[in-house]
Length: 92
Image (cartoon, rainbow, N blue to C red; front, side, top):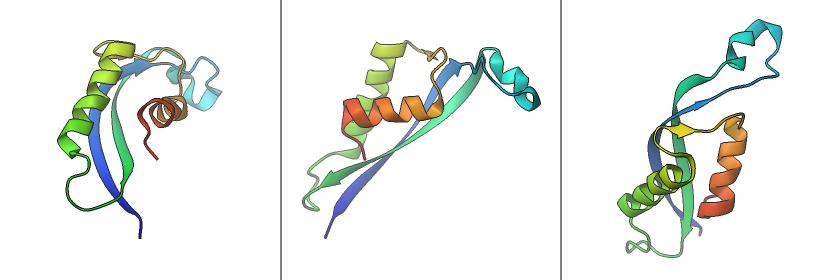
């Protein structure tokens, strides 16, 4: 049986979509989001192998160090941000 812990962070940040199609051209300008970051981490047993609170702090610290606070994501898409988390924090 596979087991996971799931974390939830709300991260304030800014990004833009310069190639936005006409129907949402406004997204081409820098705009603010509260990015809801939900991560899943596999664990091997039920006895607090990883502490959810600690993982949430690691995620928040990672974003703060890499992108500042509030985060400045530039032209990164939400999918780019998710890939960064998977690649660098071991989330699935």
